[in-house]
Image 1 (tube, helix red, strand yellow):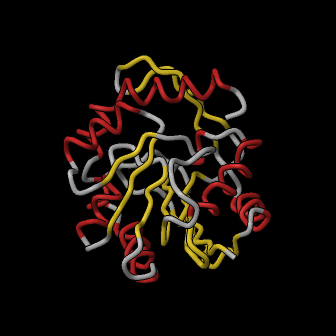
Image 2 (tube, rainbow, N blue to C red):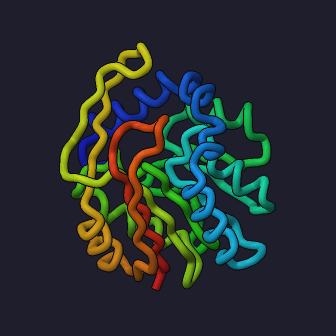
Length: 213
């Protein structure tokens, strides 16, 4: 990220809450039918035999869900704590510690990629670089499934489940993210919005499915 202090604070914050996060959220997809439907659609459209990347994977529960459906998955996260927690729980996922702005992957390594609530920790100036990296690691015509909170605010947290943290959550307008994706070499094929589920933070959420051109 352009601001290394911000970058480090995000990593430290997720290291701090990694065990709690994993314990609370490792099975959250069970209560998110629309998310599961979109992931199933992504899996169906992924070139057979290719790997699906989970970018900003946290403890890897999304990658693990895809693996349970027969996918080969690689989870990438900035936080070593998240990688360690996920590795203990989800042995079926290959984990790599790494940065969205410099992904630990070869050119064209992945058939598709998912990034649920991952770009919310990026500064707007870093989004184009992150999308360029996502395009680099995808095969031609590979798909990227993104989700994020809708709006233009920045929510700062210095406490999370009783732990001291220092992290910003950025909200984005779908039209803005669509424009950046198109500028980075993607075509947006699907745009869906939903309200929060009862157990989620009260925000409106956007999902974009973009194909590498």
